[in-house]
Amino acid sequence: MPSEFALIDRYFRRRTRHTVLGVGDDGAIVRPSAGMELVVSTDMLVSGTHFLPDADPEDLGWKTLAVNVSDMAAMGAQPRWVVLAAALPAATESWIEKFSRGFFACADQFGIDVIGGDTTKGPRNFCVTIFGEVPPGQALLRSGAQAGDDVWVSGHVGRAALGLAHLQSRIVLEEPDRSECLAALHRPQPRVALGLALRGLATAAIDVSDGLLADLGHILDESHVSAHLDIPGLPPTGIERECRLSGGDDYELAFTAPAALRGEVEALVERLGLALTRIGSITSGVSPRLTFPDADGNPVEIHPSGYDHFGSGAN
Ligand code: ADP
Ligand code: MG
Image 1 (tube, protein in one colour):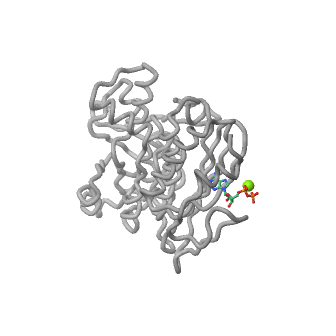
Image 2 (cartoon, helix red, strand yellow):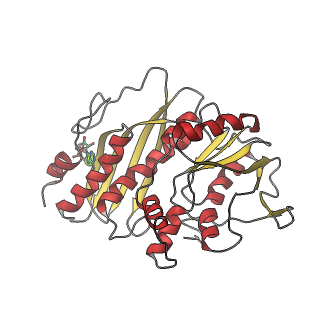
Image 3 (cartoon, helix red, strand yellow):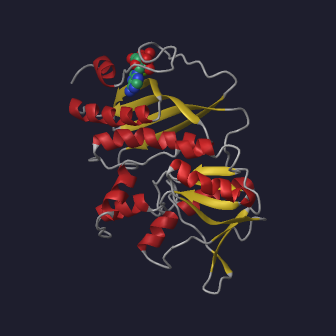
């Protein structure tokens, strides 16, 4: 196995686009765009918890960065720089080469410079810290939802969990569903363009990493409001319903926007080539927190279960 420094040089040192000083010194130097605020977020991926030990390294490299880019999207920020702290067992170089290929594919797609990190030997673990930019006061927070707002979600939430269920032989997916769901699981597409377009439009936003209801719940809690949901095409029971409501790992955006701006949100569907579905509305007060219509259309309270590392997770 080559030295730590040779590995870094070979697989993690690339030409940067908008960085004063990148990989190679004791620290990186960046110059934020004039007048912008920096948005900072970090996410860790641990073998056995976030990915299987035999995960495809190239997919894993993509996903390691994509989940962090997704946090920038949820903030309405333009992702700009990342640092990568990696613990690697005495892995073969071919594994690291593939991981790096997936990681830089995501960096290139979103115009992000990889500016530093740390590399150490240990159980496989990746921690990315990402920096993005947003005009002052324009970041999308979890705390801005207002009674009367529409609730929206992008893409097709539940696909990643369905893909996982397929891999675990809990269901059998036929084509084209199988490919779509496995792509959602292995190659999540962070909704950066949507996040940027939602500045000044959405009142609150979050990325769906732990399940739609669980993550929407964070918006409700931070905004001190509740929601009545009526999700088009949601099956009344079964695994698809469970995946759509509580499956994690989709990295779509859930957001709220004033009902008066419904037309502007709908216009984004064509502009971005991305499905956006109106799934309910925000109501005042904090209880009942989440309701669905029953067979007669009357609101019934539901209690979501999403993924919680220290609780009883659903997946
Ligand atoms: P130090 O001893 O000062 O911590 P290192 O030897 O850990 O420096 O790192 C050397 C350079 O390589 C630094 O610029 C660091 O940011 C960068 N680096 C280390 N590991 C990674 C990695 N996995 N990805 C990107 N850059 C890395
Ligand atoms: Mg170091």
